[in-house]
Image (cartoon, rainbow, N blue to C red; front, side, top):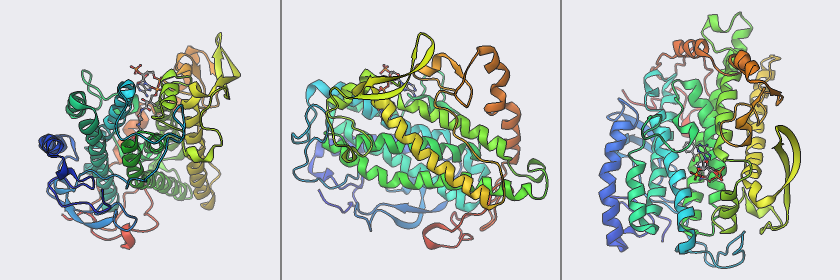
Length: 467
Ligand code: BYC
């Protein structure tokens, strides 16, 4: 195990050449991945030189090496954080015992399910975004889209490595299926809801990277605590890459808000080619609530089992004093006989809600920064996260209807009003009507403000994607 990533056919820091059988199996999967990338990756951009960051080592100074690369030549590979000698289980029934380098048989199925679910999201997001290059608001944004895409491709590699190495034949079959499911496909959809939703324009892309990638941050952080050490180490390295994706989303929406606020000073935002703030709020409502669903049910025996077995912990487990969670409870809203009541729920079964609560706080911090931008522009409108009960499709709130401020409403009222709260067809048509590619270095589409600075210290007018 070294920090340096090799130049092998499959770049890695796990001494892949020391395990010929595994190396062969992954080398057989590699061309299928490339075929999938060419078919389902960014459409029409494969021959272009893109200014991308690639990992050359897992050390702080090595994971962000910038250069022009053609996307199919990107160094997808297997990068794990170095092993910490003496690491022990940090939580659950095995707390204090040495972490595992192999999976005990009784936990194999549960762990495989988590790894497959995580792995499935990565190619799904690339599929969702594959047509966006045709309408990029600038070369800067185009390059950021591709950076996100190639890294999601690498995150698929991270999970496929685990499947091939630790799950035998089942794992190899799952790795094949990860390349066969398709986002939004009626017959073989991706596993989780949000990853089958269309990301048909850049406002949805920025909301996706703000809210859905942020779910990724929290899920990966929970898996980074795992007592199955190879999973923990691979997720830790993935988290370093994930931060950029959320930056793309948060700063993207912030720039759209800024532009709207600027245009408000001179007239109607839409008429001047901007996206008005109430429309931005609707897309926030949509993508935030789709992403809330990704945390699973509020009360979940799956979550309790994963915690007990030491497979999936909480966000930054170190912050807590108690790590077994036997006998403790979490106070949360639940449904009892059709009514919302606040109740103590056994902590282990409430862990999806605990993680979702941390996520909500993090989303609020981002929304606060957007609101500061609006205020600085002299604008009174403030963006707001809707209630966690609003527009849910997974968990206990999905059986009823709630308004954005969390009031229970009838199905009739929902039918009448949901078009005020979520993007309707007219909004979707309007937003799409603004999406025209701007490929001239330094130029921006009418609906988005320029970024505060360029990539890697370069100017905003740098040619991030060569013609
Ligand atoms: N859609 O006990 P429950 C990312 C299913 S994003 C559809 O309530 P559990 C990324 C569930 O599978 C991070 N089905 O939930 C971001 C189960 O089905 P089975 C991805 C759903 O299991 C942007 C049943 O409902 N990370 O990285 O405690 C770009 C009851 O489940 C959904 C992970 O997913 C849904 N939303 O928790 C690129 C981490 N939710 O098994 C990448 C690994 C639940 O009964 N996964 N179901 O048939 C997990 O930790 C858990 O599987 C979940 C669900 C948190 C997702």
